[in-house]
Image (tube, rainbow, N blue to C red; front, side, top):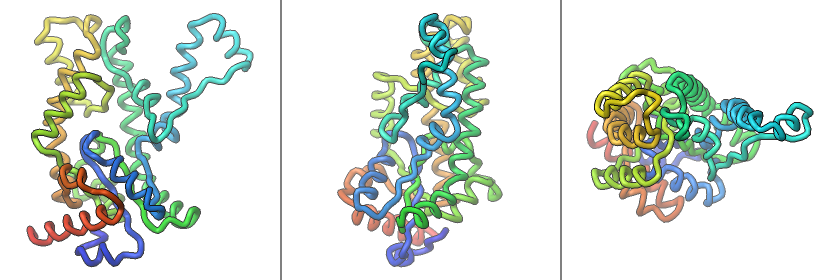
Length: 290
């Protein structure tokens, strides 16, 4: 790791962090607190995915929908209107809407083959955005004068890397340039995430084998044909299983490539100094286990 001890971290003139874990446990809150201190650059992987790598796909999908309305279709053909997404750090809805959910198109779902195509696009985009991290560290320093950097990853990072492979291209690049920090939730956090998701189910990225396994299980359990699937019902069915699937992957990432902090610890962080001290504590705990 680029900081082997708490002292090395605390004394470093440039601090480079990467945070990972399930969405909803405090990654973006921590990044926002550090950014508010004034000398931290916040690199959002999801924002990079939605702008640099998926922006054209998102816009084309919007145009495809608009072309089904004759009035808008004529304006588009004559270049009289512009259609694009207004994706921001705080509003990633255009990305998640494009990713979508599989199921009955009449209920807002996507045919499974189209859903898988979009999943594959997201996977490649996420890998590319993660591999962009070193160049953004340099950009933050050389262009904007930020000495410190935090990479705020999406919840699906564990789905696009192999934490047990010492030669994993993405993890090697990230570990060489950042201190990787897992925000670990408790069983209570998991229950709360499931409760929130049940109220407002959202699109997710899944590993291909996991997706097909859950899809087939849902069809069999409910005696359904693919076109009969309620998209929200399916993603609710898969969510808790996705959390259980991801937990050991996150843990392996932390054990092999980084350090761990608890979501409860993150919740107590009040400002950038608290955050820096907490990371030092996490490094100290790792040293004690070694």
